[in-house]
Length: 166
Image 1 (tube, rainbow, N blue to C red):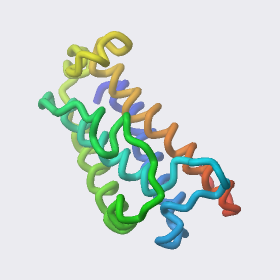
Image 2: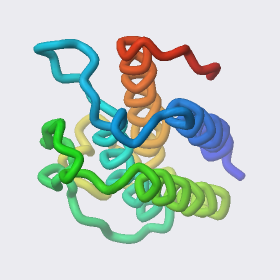
Image 3: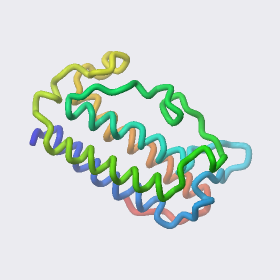
Image 4: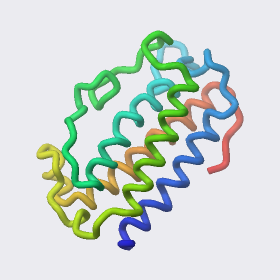
């Protein structure tokens, strides 16, 4: 396994376990709660729905498969957090999908051909900052997910919930 793949895999596995700890004690109605009056925070419903959009992109990149740019997807980059539970799948569905997608990406990472990491980033708008697939995978599977899990941790604290060990 390539060093870059091994490094990504360590964080991907740790993030996956951390994400589940962050929501493990939540009641269903908390998944869209806003703890700060007058402010909208990224809540668990949006965070999991959003991460579930991007994990399959990482898997496709690792397999050298094409994928759709999800920028305008309902939970993509341009999406806005809403506080209506009907706008999100139920928590158990989000969690199950997250686990399945995480496992798919993990298997793809473990079996990825070394040359995939040096190939051009498939999505043109990402190439300026991340010319090679390996660079984009670090952003997508490490930085992106870790950033949103940090938001989830801050949301927990604003909700008055206990911290969760990383």
